Length: 148
Image (tube, rainbow, N blue to C red):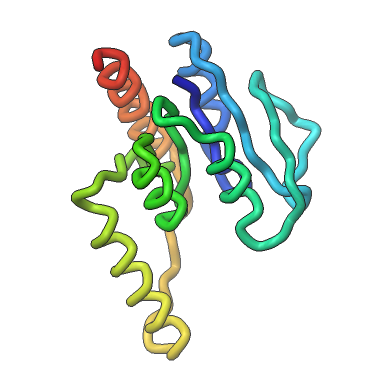
């Protein structure tokens, strides 16, 4: 098992690397050149150009069924599930065959409303509680995958 991170907008890279180190799991962080940083964690970085979906496509190229992917992108999560791997959001939501269709549909519906200027969503700041919940769920997911 490896942990692959959709790293362009992932606020929990440090937490992932900390958990991965404790469980001796390799981490790969996929980022675009637009999000390149010298602040490197204990992980393998894979940098791609900043074209639309380039990070997602590169991550899928490296994906195996044993991998765990951290992403907030429902489309990428659907691809990961279709491949037989596991995906979790930065909020600790585990994507499943049972919830992904609903999430994709809701996301599409809400984006249509935003384009029509009928709905404006202001997300709250990612906070300490979000980080703790993510970390707890990541550990639980790793432990459950290890039992299989």
